[in-house]
Structures are given as C-alpha cells and as structure tokens.
Amino acid sequence: MLGKSCNLDLFHKSCLDIWSLDITPKVRHFLWRLCTGTLPVRAYLKHRHMTEYSDCPWCVGTPETVQHVFFDCPTVREIWVECECTEMSLWPNDMCFLDLMESWGKLDAKKVCRGAILMWNLWNRRNAMVFNGKEVYHPVIVGRVFCLVADCNTYTKRIYGGIKKPSCRNPKSWKAPPEGMIKINCDASLSVEGWVGLSVIARDWIGKGMLYLQPAAELEPTGVQS
Image (tube, rainbow, N blue to C red):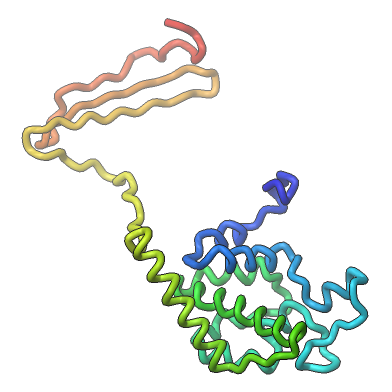
C-alpha cells in the first residue's frame, strides 16, 4: 500500500496472491518485481535509456520483454511442457501480467507454485547467459525446479506441520448443543439514527427455548450512558 501511495485503485488482487503461495521468500520477491514492472529485461532498460540493446540473448532481432523471456522465447517453451505447467504459459496479448497471475487462481495450487519456481529459474538462466555467457541446459533447469518444490514442501511440513486446514465458518443453521448443555445465541443491530437493538435466546439440547429477551423499545443511542 505504501508503494502504491495508499491508492486502493492501484491495488491489485494478484499482489495478495503472491504472499499466499507456498514458495520461498526470494521467489515471492521475484514475482513482486514482475507485478510492479521493475524486472530489468533489456526492453525495459532501453526504454529507461540505460542500454542501447534490447534483443533477446537467444533470439536476435526480437525485443527482450517479460512476455518473451518467460513464455514466447522458443528456448523456454519445452521447459514449461516438461514441468507440466503449460497452462500457466498461455499469456494473451491483451492481458497484463497482473491479470495473468490472477487467472492462475483457477489452477491447482501446487502447479502454480511449481510454475512460479520455474519462472525464477528461467530468470537465473537468462542472467547466466547475459553476464557469464553460460548456457544452462533444459534437464538441469527441470531438475532444479522439482528439487526446490520438494524442498519447499518438506520445509513447510517440518515447520508448520503441513498445509493448514481452513478455519470453520459459522453454520448457516442452528445446531443443538450436547445433552445437558444450554446454548445461548445473541445478536445486535445498529440503526442509522444510532439506536441499538439486542436479542438473546437460550435453548437446551432438544431445542426448547428457556430464555428469550428482545426489548420492546430500542436502547438509548450509542455514546449515551444509561
């Protein structure tokens, strides 16, 4: 929110999705840079007048954009297939990365985590070629992806005891308490004028009402001592 100048109109749901992924913090930070458009691909650096070259290290004459680095470059397409994350690599031209990441919410959570780790490894592969002139071959990248996924799952299970179960929501219908117990339900309402209403009911395990309280008149306005 501070990075967006506290403007809710500029806040995107994908920014919350990043931190809910079961991946390492360095991969989350990497995805955050993708969402904020600050990943230093060559097309971005040329736009900022920081370099004269914008070509992909493998595809001469093709600008190195975020979409090209991770999805459109012919050298990465087979890797998405081998990592079984092909659905994540389909990026329509009229969609920004924020919307693309939000669409991943419809996919399996484990697959999304594996695809995010794959993108991080593809970026490291690109940097190895740009700065060191070193080519990292496909089997090595695929092996690193599945190895890091397994490490993340092991770490989560050891530290947090596995995937947490979703918290129980309030039931939509009333449920009787155990025999010999009395359940008390209450509710309150606040009207526009500031008046407060209160209702209380106590029922046994059979469902028979033992106490029912609903004031005939509204209580005093809020902020006024009775």
